[in-house]
Image (tube, rainbow, N blue to C red):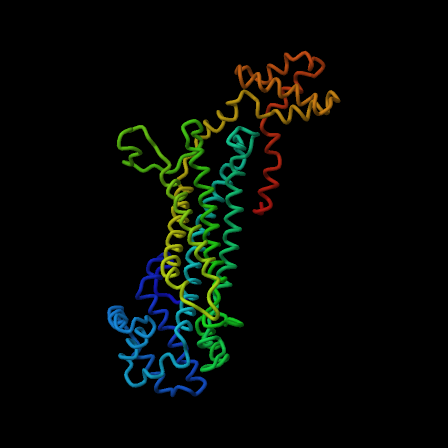
Length: 431
């Protein structure tokens, strides 16, 4: 990676000066490769290397006249080089420099996102280990289901983050490609050895085949990986939002000193950070769709893709970085109310143990599944409507008079549901 920006600063990477600086790096690498092949004299290369420079203002001034960004850039640099400026852009087409430079910026941007994702993963792991053996209620369809380890919920996030990281790393490898193959990819004014050397100097792999551009399936892969990461962050944020609801109150995003939840209602503590992440993930999905629509272009190239890429690439990375770092801060500051977690397990008066009771009756009384299910469901519905404890109703049910009460009571405990948690964790961590 070319070091000229903070590893945390996506904005600096994509600002106009740095974009042109990366383009200059490509131009200089081509000059060096041409010099090695004897096409550019050594003294000319030294002169170019020493004097090649630009200002954004001058490039923009020239572009107003030429109406061509790369022509304006090359002209601005050549002005500062002098007579040896004639060697700049030798044998190249605009997309040689634009696409190769874009590959560098996309690659380096992915490095920043991956580094941020590693920090998020550490926060998820810390939560998973801290709450590994804390029982909480699992929910399906928003309804209480069966007990789960609270740490297992966080471990599930860790597992998904690992898959996100794998997709980003694959996208990084796929997009780290350069091309110096000319106007339609035939090397008419250059040669494959030149391309290979330029890519080597820039830390890229030469595309095995290209036309005027690098094909946009690579770039769509990057945007889709970012969009899926956004989906992961949205999923985590949505879970925290639900856990923070008044009726649940098991976990809360950080709430700063002096922070206000509402202009009208002082009691409000709203999950605004998580809501923000959920909203921003929609932008990433939209950018991914645009990236896929950029794949199909006319013949060897048109420019219908390029105007969108000027917007979606820097925006997508800025959004993904902001979302990831925000979620890291949320997880590091997550407030878990363990007493409320324990309370919510018991909120349904024992109904969450119904499957275990059902299985027990199948084994104990040798009933058909339909008959056993009917007994359990009938008592469960009575508990739900009356508030009488599920266990008490079962103990008083004449159909279960031959069942040992102590064995029935033993079904209503949480350790049974957490007995494989250590084994699941061992799939990720060595003890």
